[in-house]
Length: 502
Image (cartoon, rainbow, N blue to C red; front, side):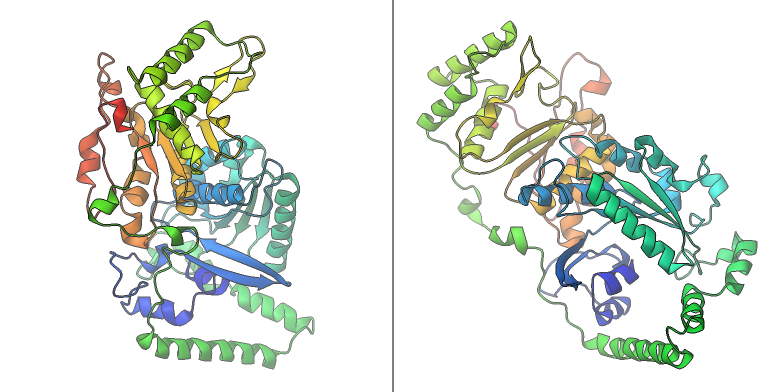
């Protein structure tokens, strides 16, 4: 991770050394708990072959692989901002770096492959790069997976998998180029499995000889990649031994200088409100409430439009009666139920230019048949989404029946909200009871991401709660857990009791 931060992202070595000495990655005047240096994200602009490339490294917790769907969600948001459509998602590329044990062991990896081809969540394929050091902390591969290769989970979607020797940098670069070309051409996930080894322990204080003595005797006597590759370049006449030693000495001198200067290093201003977040300001007292109402005339106009269907559309008679009742609700202003209040809220935002994205299991119709945001022609199964047909210049409305997953889908929507603060991004649990299938996302990202990494999110989680008569598995979102996680203005827990709350 530190290598990526320094050599790929361009983070100054002195900044990293300063953190080793107990310094903070953020300016003193900015509040926050901070996190260990291996979890921090970064962003930078780098030039390669005359092309300027923006790089963004997402902050992640110690919970392995849980950042994967977050990255995919960020990428999808950026692709939407670029106006990318299916088959055209080449301008933003997700690159996920894995360990062998976690890639095989963590179920969220399989969930992400499950998302990869779905309309509401596809990103044109991620490049998955596995640093296969043939060990998981202290556990050998034969005890940490049941398949021959750690990459075998990717076979569930028939992704191409390249196995490369980490001691041969040119081979690794070669397959990386092929993998990138494949992704850009076919816009499908691709996997690189780089066989290598971990020269030292799992961390600075770990002793690997306790558990893998034979392996680490081999590693101790095995020349490093730098030694092997430099010898090859010298033997081929590409460089001289003196030139190689000069390069090593020069880089060591650079590191020594950076270490000396790290004491006086001061972080730049926090970048947490840069980019898309730059228009988001702080509000206090009454200003925080804002003007949330919408003129009645506008609501009536929206209500008329979202209850109008094409003349040749064969609607189910029950849904047709529902639309008639909704039109009566908006005309009389009486009896507005949850589904109609929600539609009016979403519609008013779209008309004002605010994109709306709602994702979750069966949320197009709604678990309780209360939403019906997507109508199905009874003869052709043609789909019609009224909230997309309010006005020609309205913002985008997306409602997505997600795959049957909580963890990856919530992580994806959280990632989307990181990159797009100007949209209403929502994830709906089928029942609030099932939200704990994504508990890691709530604990490590939603409740604490701003405090740890200065990363803000406007994600809204809908947790249908308190339904009577369906037993203990369908009646409690366990709201006490969310209240227990509430601190430092990290989120708001709203108990909505009437349609007017929308």
